[in-house]
Amino acid sequence: MSDDPRPYHKPVRRPAELFDRLYSGDDPAEVSRIAHSTAAALLARVREDPDVDVVERLVAFTDRHGIDDIADLWSRAPARSLPGALWRLYLLQLMIHDDPRTAALLFERGRLARSGADEVVAGAPTPAGPDELVTLIDTILRGLFQGDFAVALERAASFCRIVAAGAVQLADDHDVAEPARASAFTTRALRLDTYAEDLSGAAALWRRDALA
Image (tube, rainbow, N blue to C red; front, side):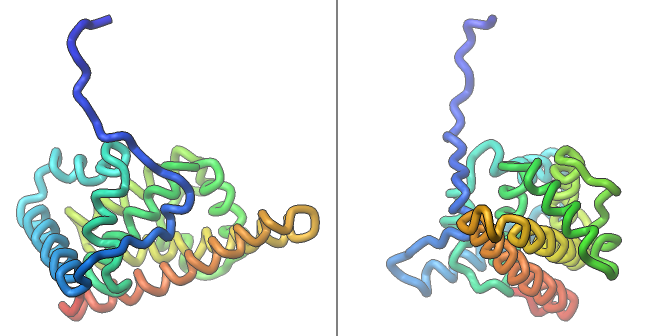
């Protein structure tokens, strides 16, 4: 063991309710201005010169620092805006990192229940276990900073649709014996479906150079 002091890191707080947590602000106009300006400045700076170390620090940000700092900046932004899209991607990453086994179960059940192109667009291997889904969401987030931004959003949207379908399946499984658990999965499914629509809408706006 080393006697050298370990560097201090802010505690990572990741309770389940953070998945849809909203933050308040004294001045909504100022909060909105800060959200949009910080998101635009960050994305422009990194995409102009996508240094690998910087990109990896951004991908790992919530693991090292938690979600609160990002939430303070972006959680109240409109869903189909640049900060709103970034916020939803980080929340999705948080959901998978926090409980990859459940995420993998939801994805597999949703993959079997759905037809269409979402499985191909999301880009997950078949079958996708917990480790594969952690890798997938980190790859999607990495694509925001050093790839095709709209494609990254569309991959995330497809992933949300598949996992939402899986949550519906699990809600049905628990409907009689565990109604509270069934209700929680139904709520998650509705939220993920909404995220899928928002992320797809943000991708379309990005392609029109209208995502601000």
